[in-house]
Image (cartoon, rainbow, N blue to C red; front, side, top):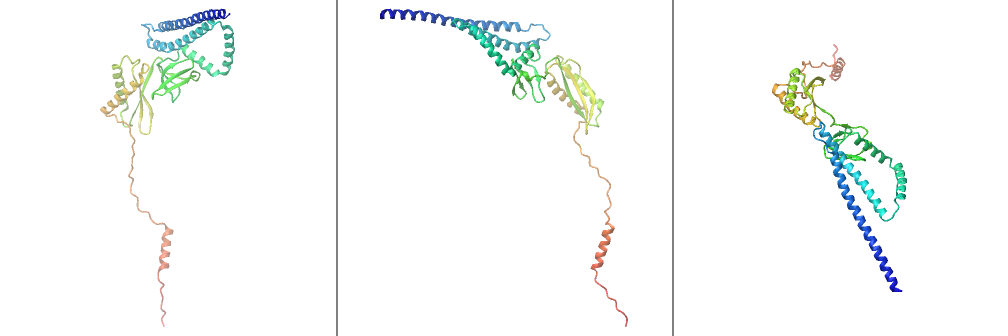
Length: 316
């Protein structure tokens, strides 16, 4: 009897061991195949998003590819992991239809409880679909937040400002923002001269400085410079404005260079720059003030009261 039980146990163990080994090898094969498929899909996605040479908006296409590639690869990975999990569960004989049905119910419940998350994901989808923002763009969200976009996801956007601070902004909050990388920008330089300065000469010198910089940087300039005057009359200065239409992200170096060039030309040509002044007027000298009549009478009365009494002798 014991021999028969031992034989049965040995046979059952061998059978289960074979099944376990086969299942283990199947799972390893599924995971390895998923890894290979993921690598192939990532390469195909990168090839599909690669900008074609000769396009007039090659830089914008490159930024768009850098924005969409990580997001699409992430989506592909999540979908592939889901398929791998389903295949592994099916290999163990688990009914996946009931699991998907329960997942649908749970998803509906989470949708009601995570409305902000759903809003952020929908907003992120349309941001990417419409091409409103891309990695490398400089955007201005409000008066305090301006920076370069480093990553755009379905839920949030990462923006790094000039100081190096990285902002995590939910896509649902990006209802209104300005993009400084679309089309062109304008370099604006405000100039101030003194009231005694020759304004037409100052305008001509500013225009010459702008034309000199434009001739030295033709690949950055879209339209020739213009000088606008007068913009304002302050307490101690007159305001001029030098403007030039340039390519995106070129307005800041253009403004710095133009300020230095205009300042050097103004100093060389004797255009007086404004500075705070204080004017002191030395009026005519006034005669010393006379005492009032009441004070004079009071002083006289006081002197009379302090005088010694006088006596008069009568003749005998």
